Image (tube, rainbow, N blue to C red; front, side, top):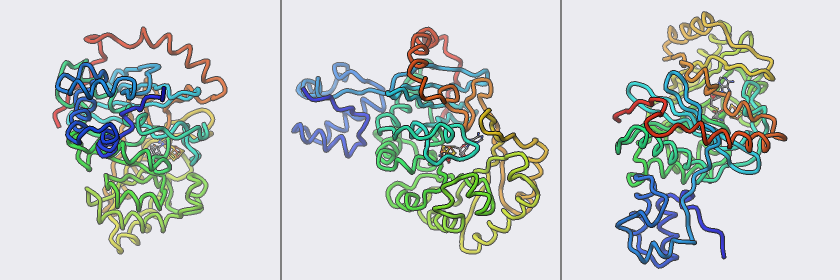
Length: 388
Ligand code: SAH
Ligand code: SF4
């Protein structure tokens, strides 16, 4: 018997093509897609208006399976972090961040990351493997329907998705694309392109492809105003230096759902946070603004982890840096850190599974704990409902 196909691996086009091989019409695929993504149903027998004949064909041939949750952490501020087992001793995380006007899910795209940024704990783990589409979209599928059950609502809870978890999404492009399309599709999660953000360390050719294939909101992790410094912090810069990256960002704007690119800038004490760095950044942005680049900056206070040897810039310096940019006409915000008590902040994800040689043992141990930690419905850690 062949291994069942995981239907979370398909966008609607893919599912329609697969259904076609079963001799099923497209509208059946749409029905199935809606049951899976809009209603969160994994059992074909529970898909009440699905033809019995199709249910019969699906049994044994297909399944709907998100990665298993190893552990759930709920922060005092409402943030929830899930650790998912993706097999082979690897775990990835997704984080739900409730705010007054939105509910954001931060999603992982790879187990580990090959870019190896100096300040990122995922980068320090090295690269394990690409997640499948099912593992990417499965994080959203699980979180959305988990939250709906706990909030006892049929309304959408997650209004925004940011590909800012573990991994470099644009180094896993072929699996990312169907996941994005499912997030956007009206029969899937129905999120608008401006509410789905891909964050990248700057994989230039793939930014160009994203512009053509699925131009969602783009965030670019810049972190430095010069190639010399960025080469050191984000090693991928040696391949795609700043000017080339920013020219690609300018071209992306013609397709983007917003009229600006978000630039992320991690504030590292004594490394990239001086007034001179801010001034150099202003000059860089001015030079590219002349060719049409529009960008906003998001300053991220560095989230330290022991092996990095780096420290967070003092808040006064982060504010001074932000003021310099704002005074020069570059809209700049400082990212609030959320979920601090559960290590849910950027670059801290799966911090406790860094030692990959021992992760299998630890996962096995955690799985036994997890069953108790997953609070029963009603005892959920009070996520807030958002209207979109
Ligand atoms: N690989 C993609 C997306 C995942 S990282 C990228 O690099 O953009 C998401 C964001 O968190 C990036 O802006 C990244 O630079 C930032 N980040 C990584 N480690 C961090 C840390 N320790 N403290 C603060 N931000 C960090
Ligand atoms: Fe990879 Fe992004 Fe971390 Fe850099 S910051 S190592 S690209 S996950």
